[in-house]
Image (tube, rainbow, N blue to C red; front, side, top):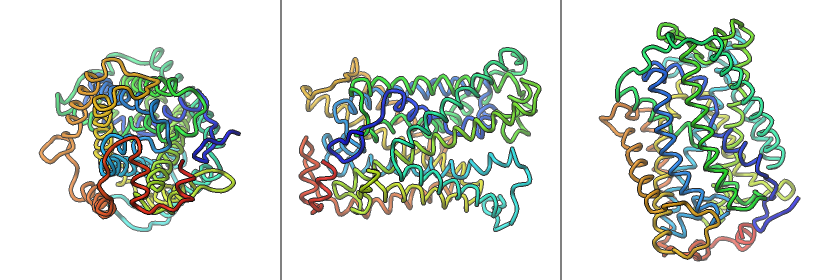
Amino acid sequence: MATNNTGLLRVLGRGDVLALAFGAMIGFGWVVLTSDFLADAGPGGAALAFVLGGLVMALVGLCYAELVSAMPHAGGEHHYGLRALGARGAFTASWALVLGYVSVAAFEAVALPQTALALFPDMATGHLWTLGGYDVQATWVAVGAGSAVLITLLNYVGIRPASVFQTVAVLFLLAVGALLLLGSLTGGSTETMQPLFRGGLDGLAAVLVAVPFLFVGFDVIPQSASEVKIPQRQVGKLLVVSVGCAVAWYALIMLTVGSGLGGADLAGADLATAEAMERLWGSALMGDLLVVGGIAGIVTSWNAFLIGGSRLLYAMASSGMVPAWFGRLHPRFRTPANAVLFVGGLSAVAPFFGESMLNWLVNAGGINIVVGYLVVVVCFLVLRRREPEMERPFRTAAGKVTGAAALVLTVGLGVLYLPGMSAALEWPAEWLIVGAWWVAGALLLWRLPRIVPGADAEARLRARMGVPEETVRAAE
């Protein structure tokens, strides 16, 4: 296998890249959160929210596509920020997205045992404590934490086994989705979908606020850019295609589930998507099969964000933004081993907080993802103005208009999380998660010198931060 100039293995092909991004964006939200979405906005309203939110993500994705083709390095946002905004802008984008990635990985560690309960209702035993109104059981924790260990080990031993695992799981997930669609076409009812729209603008906003968390994942492609073996122009195209695939998936889930479960049934549904599958096919076995598909979604998302989060931390360590410990490459597997262990370790801790962590992570991670995207869009616009001649294998059409639209819409999405808005973060849990993360970030940011943006900004930052020569060689 080829090794590129970062020491990482360049092994990912077209299918691997698409499976990585699509699997990251699907996750488990389509199973565990669908009943809330339908109750808030109705099938049509929820589908519309995903289309609108997907439009915002597509515009941001076009900015990413151009940048990743121009700077195909592991830890994408880190490099875009350094070149366009300097060290502090790069840190802000990177630190925000690290929390987003960690929150998704932790979310999946909580979602997996919760899903397993649908298949094994008697699994939860050994009461530990009650948190946020939910009883935390020892066996429940063991399933989540044990799975975190396995996923972490898979990523520790190499990008190749992790990408093969990703592709197989995504193919199974797509097969389950096709069965749900077929069941809706043959056994669904438009009457069950009534009312098609609920909750007005508040209902739409309640779904829109979850979109950044659910769609985060296309940006895993820039994180693993140093491990891709296809032309960078094609990488940019695949990034945009992956967003379109996710929009279609989520919109179809809202409509198909709405065709199988009405309002009264949704109110009592723990896993509305699985119950809709069971009803549409008239078989409990099909409901169980969808749950297994949900588990496939969990592990594809989990796997992708371990890859993305670890590569971003690796890039930050290579320039001295975070401790050099995160920049260690395993001598045999050529993976950022310590960064993988860090992200995996945090996901292993999440199940100890119980089911209440699900909503906390969605919203706390979501607002940070929006911050990261906002900085990337600014980088896109700055580089279009400052470096118009920079080589861009994938060049976004109407770049300034696209970037300006992405900027406005991303800001609008971020406003939904603020106090007084219908989808504001909850106090104290969600604000405490966000606050604690940025207090830690402020301590790291305080020590960074002011670096003038430019193509050599990272080299100058490394020199100022006293990054060891061996770390520089590994990163360059």
